[in-house]
Image (cartoon, each protein chain N blue to C red):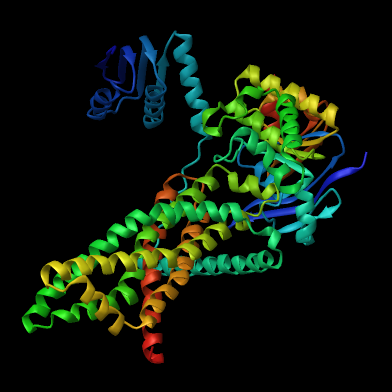
Length: 245
Length: 370
């Protein structure tokens, strides 16, 4: 399997506070990869750095073969079409209905006609388990779980190779959360996605993740599969994985 | 609410504190006063919680603190209840862990002043950064006509132009009435009634109409831009746009700026018309100048340049209002308070910038003899 994302020696400083001090990790094709760690350790920051929303101070991140430090605007635009991002609260565009939210990238980036776009939108809506009857609703009219599903459908609109999920199950009731886990596994198998997610939901972690990276103490405390995690010398791993089991 | 009682028994060397009932944060303060008023020199203190049927965490902290306070004496806590025991243990476990809060460093007044100046300077730099990015995006935008977002521009023209017509018309009409009415009184004294046309024409076309329009639009559209973009930033819509490759500068910033630059001169024209009309009505009623006479005199004395100067200011004012409004919107942080803060700032700064710009124009045009 070839590496999709490589992070080497990333250092991030906020004002005077060091958030990351030399992070290294590699994410391979087809993996569901989790970024875990205590709150405030900079998981979401790392995710934001990967999707070019935030700059890092030192080191290198390479995504699908592009080095983010010296990426050209054109390549960056191309890269942005090859990934999908699901934000914590969905971040749907509030002025557009669900179906227009999903159709937006298709309308902007392709010259497909409306009827095909509508079919694609319908497919994506079914894929994530939304009802087609709800597609005309606006983000303010739907529940949190539906927003996440709609956000996921929008992230999948351009058939990305790479999917970034920021706490996909937070704020969902347990049943919806398990449904969401199943959905993520299904999508990986069906679409051959590589998925990177930040999560706090232990059940979801055990259900979905192939590999994890634990960020603790500004560094990667552990990278690998969940089975071998117990030997790790990290307070977070001890409390999170032992006390919760 | 259940009450608690404290029975204090003092023997020669020993002090008994017997709590009963349910000890909560609501009943704690009286006991604290009772205990504080005691003179304690006993070597053994027994805190008896056997008759207590409930303790909350606040009260448990109080008990824990008592134990620490009397560290010179031997303190015994008596309890049989498992729940109370576990509450006390929980407190003990987490109290030892908590370190002292870090105090916010306090600064001398001079340091505060320096910090404020530095903040203003950084604010200015980041506004320059915004303008620079805007310029780069604008070049990219002009290079390729396919990029121009006609739909968004049209939408913004409707939002901040067409829908503002009513309020602009009404305000300008009233300003025209007020200016004519005030000058009519003075002019009548000298029998110089007809000069109301010169006065109204030049002041309205050249200065008042552009300023009034800009101020109304700053209050109306400037604040709306800040609030819209600020809210989009909080809900991460801007982040979502960037990750999808839709540059917010192209999708949100430039359409608004271009729309306002197109629409403000038109609004100034409307303001001109209504202002003069208001003045004409007053001249007719108060000064007995017929509208025919008014218009004849108007074409005679008010040169076209005054009108053009007023209109030319429009795009400049529009650029200032829109860019300040949007810049403030982009500066909104992740909390709802900062929307209000930035909206206020955007309106104040936009109006200030418009007036400074107007002053610069005034000096420039006078120096050029226009």
